[in-house]
Length: 248
Image (cartoon, rainbow, N blue to C red; front, side, top):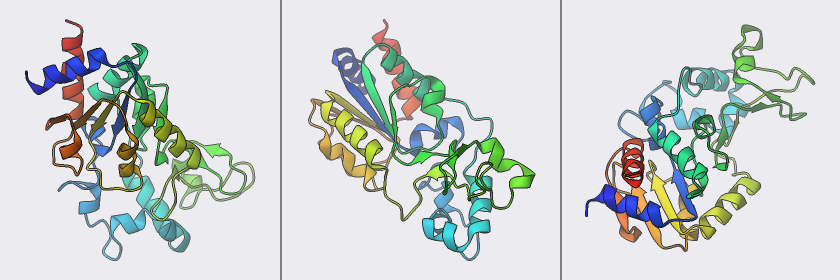
C-alpha cells in the first residue's frame, strides 16, 4: 500500500482528526516560507539587522519606523488565494472528519478557504489592533499613505501594530489552550508543512494521544520516528489526492 492510499484509509476511519500546519502549507499559494534556502529568514534584507530581529518585539519598540517598513514590504501579501491544501482541509471539516486546524501561519488562508475552527498560534496579519484601546484595523488602513510610516488608531490615536506574535512575545493563552484541547481529543493528527523547530508551537504534538500520527513535510523533522506515516511531498497535492481516493 502506498503512502497516499494509507492516508486515505486513515482519513476514512477518522472521526476527530486535527491538522497542525506551518509555513509549508502556504508556500503553494506563493507565500515564502521562513527557513528553507529561499525563505525569508535566509535573506539578508537589511545590512544591520537579520529578518528575525526585524520581526521582534524589541525591534518594534526600538526601531519602530523600520519595523513597519519591514512588515509592509515583507509580511503583507497581495493577491494570494487558498491552495488545494487549504480547500481540502475546509472540505474535511464540512464532512465532519476534521475537527480543527492549528496553524503557525498568519495569512488567514484557512478561513478564506472556509475552515471554521482555526487556532492561529501566531495571530493574523489581517488584524491590526490599537495598543491602547484594542480597536482592530484592516491591512488596507495600514497601507494608506496617511498612515505611514507609523499607523495610529482611528479612534484614540494610539499606535496600531500587527496582530501577530512577534519574537520575544508569548502565545495567546486562550488560543493555546484551544489548540491543546483539540489535539488531545483527536484520533488522528496530521502535521504538515512544518519543520517542528519553533517552540512552544512545535511541542504541541506531545499532547497527542490518538491513534494515527501523520507527517507531511518535504524535509525530515524531529517527530518522524514517532509517526505512523511520513510523506515527503507538498501538503496540498498530498491531501487533495488522498481525498480524491476517499471519494472513489
